[in-house]
Image (tube, rainbow, N blue to C red; front, top):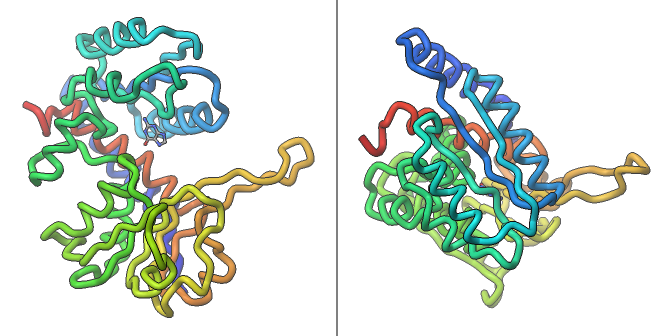
Length: 292
Ligand code: GUN
């Protein structure tokens, strides 16, 4: 088994990003500016946003966080979006999901200017991705594609099974892997909560992407010998107070790693690459590479 080490790849990509930011500053341009909008105080969301901010700063980007209480009205949040769309000092921004129940993430995301939608969640970016036009790719699938590319993992003609059909991971992941591209050219199956004989299908996967949101769901009996296993899950278990807290994925690493040819650990696999992809999109936004 070989480890797909997201931390090593992220460090390498950070150097490239930092050099690109430096070059912009040398040209007299401002550093790319990313804003994260966060509503409420979900601890996981706060951790993600802090981590995005820290990594943005580490490559020389400007990063701000706009925090609002979970009681904010949708009309007020839409005003924030309108403001960010107009603010010329902001190159790209994200609205951290999930949002509280009373807010429609669909309406909020539709209001984002696609040129500043560095999460790649706006329907315009999704549509452009489907049509293979320049767009911002959603960060997690984009990060996974970069991992496959970095480690020269063969994808041509492989059967890839994606567990999960979310807008954020499963659906775009399946699309990117099926594209006529390198990495790409996979035959893709999407499995979800209604899939029958799930383990039978996963056992046929040359590449298995687990984005199902269930801790240690994928066990060794569900995996083919020699498969490439990508784990998108992030689950906190144990107690912070007792010092027993740790993070696990959607894959039972100890047993699955014995069968896999390549596998991403959790933490330190897909996670670090997700932030790198977001920052890559922010750099593209600042350079006006996608929407001129
Ligand atoms: N929540 C979980 N993942 C993401 C992400 O990539 N972007 C945003 N905005 N929210 C998330």
